[in-house]
Length: 110
Image (tube, rainbow, N blue to C red):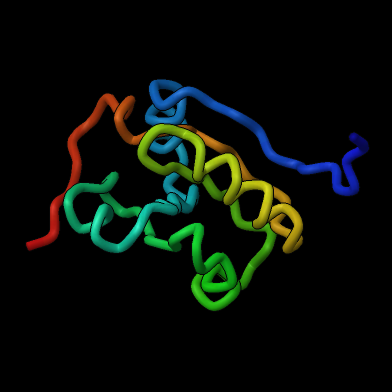
């Protein structure tokens, strides 16, 4: 099967992503899980843009040149979201996989 689109995004482990995030405060973190999952625990500073509603990214992150790290629970939805965001013209995407592999603390909303 031929691929119509060439997706443009990188992959990075959660351990390496944590180092990058600590070194570069301009990285935008996007959690593509459901709002309910997000409230139960997310990486501090992350924005919630569920993969089911990807067009929200254009309102929340209008600059398509932002450096964006995308994650979900285990890695499947983050990959799909990166494909969608890439199709939408976002050019600096990194799939950092699943939050289950995050080596740092999480933020929980009450």
